[in-house]
Image (cartoon, rainbow, N blue to C red):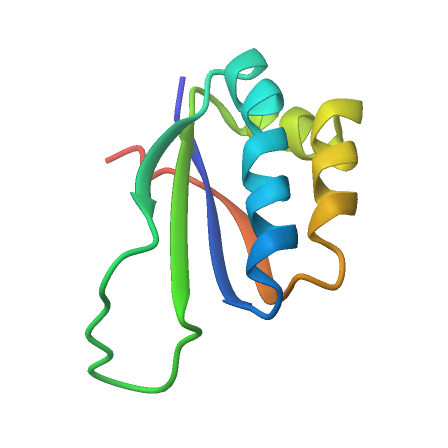
Length: 97
């Protein structure tokens, strides 16, 4: 089974509210077998542009990645993030090669 990933790039606009989101999202991530590969930290942009924070989360399958995003647990956490950050999040399957 091919793994899948959430790739997010965010600019945090309200650190206190974003911290509440981070505290709340753990339940969904644990339920769907998520594992942080990259969780913020220093970045070195070589081409194009990026947001201040990059996060990569690994899931055991594309189905698990999608189910986690749609889950009531994650949607409740996501509501805490509303207005606390700007950015994008994509779900991509891993490479099978």
